[in-house]
Image (cartoon, rainbow, N blue to C red; front, side, top):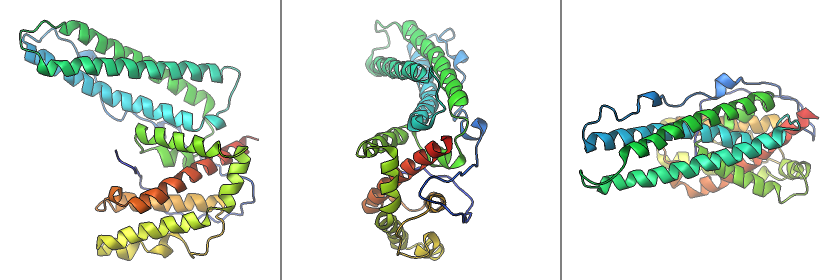
Length: 305
């Protein structure tokens, strides 16, 4: 599984005074900018009426499953994004109830999809004249499309109602990740927050105790770039591109955003380097990314107060 997913972000120097508490960093993004159907699918065309032999039926079934998988990726991406920022949702009395319902629906979708995939795997080993109800399996797939369409609408409604005030920095870190990466980030973020008495305490610790990790992450990235031997990368992205000095005590929140914009931009645009084979950088980056996520969450919480 890929560890990193990054997007191209214009480099911008933000220089604002940030106290110990979150700063009102107001830039926002609309839903249309962030979420979109990542792959086209036309589920209405999936039927077996024109399939007159077993081979054609099997191909149509597998084709429909591939289409559903693309739809499921979009649904799960949205779901885990909303879970990541659940602490900063603009809640009312019905929010928890709606999210519990969605949790159950997502688990149900996963379970049904896994069961269908297991049945579809059997098709590879059946004789052409085997006793198998292709139409029944196909009906289950069509039902799953209907179910997922309703679930996606539920998630979109929750996002519009409770997450309208999230800003670009929150979306930026998550936009191009896979849903598996978001799920892992959610797990690591929650585990880290649980080590502290409150989000405030977690924020304070991260704010004042991340200098060494920040420097180690940047140095490890620069080492990977230098080891690649690619001159254009080496010339463009030395340590000073990311940080003015290796004497980092604490970064202001705006400086965290600036640093991650640069990290995301550079790793996305040095695509000739395989960062999956750089374990030291991967380790540092994942730790720093989790801390950055907590900074984003706390900043959003501060703005709501």
